[in-house]
Length: 392
Image (cartoon, rainbow, N blue to C red; front, side, top):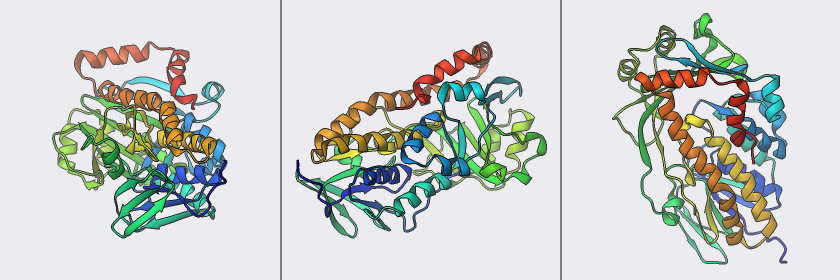
């Protein structure tokens, strides 16, 4: 077997959580990596994200568990409230029984903090090079090598990983399925100091207020210093991208029938950021020769399962395992990687769509949803989570 070529890197397009996770995993396997990011500065936009026990399986493998715990908030419960009547629908304690079942906690973390953890870990690796302020325009796969085309010239590598997100340039040459699917749901997000949250509404929980074609998520970040709010509703508006200034008038109109606690939280925010929620149908193949996809580039999903970042990190570990076992045959490694991943990620994609309808139920459907969840035992609820939280 040919020894690793230390002068020719594996190329990664995209510097989000998935791209840096892949770089770190490949570096740990002894590969040289060159990561390309369009933004001039390496930073993650966004607000809070949720990380389930399956993500901690990844952190444990990479030796990042302690630093993640130090940055994260650990909620006491996952709670669903009826956003119209303000009655509790269900509450899942995240204490001993949850930990006994899944071995790891459920955590809440600022996206920028999780991203920084991976960026710093990569910075400590001599065989990872990062180039920022560069736009990927395409690629060519010559069989023995891959050429990445950018607005600043060409770069050559042994293989290419497209971790360039929902609007992936790499995906279009491999899959060619055009623009993503618009869900018709819009999300507004905001982070505010805990001091601005009414004391009666400050809870150490991940709480979802489910309304008719709307929902509001609230939870603490950074040890309770900050509070994360995400308001989601059905809308005909559409703007490409996801970090656009929101329209408070439309937001409050959509939540006009919401319970008093929901309206109280919404009233505390003067400036929201808005993004349109999009995904794609699951696909079985996202590789071609020495090129493959990862994270949202491969399997973009709606946020209702809180698994986008988790799935990208799982991808990174599995991809590195398969590449590491082959050394030189990237094509075969990429096919094995996607075979291990497509059903699991596809299930999350489709489950997220169903959860969106479940959260936004109205009329009789809303009553049936509440009755169903209120009638479940804790064991039944934990059983239903096992396929996801047991991890890879």
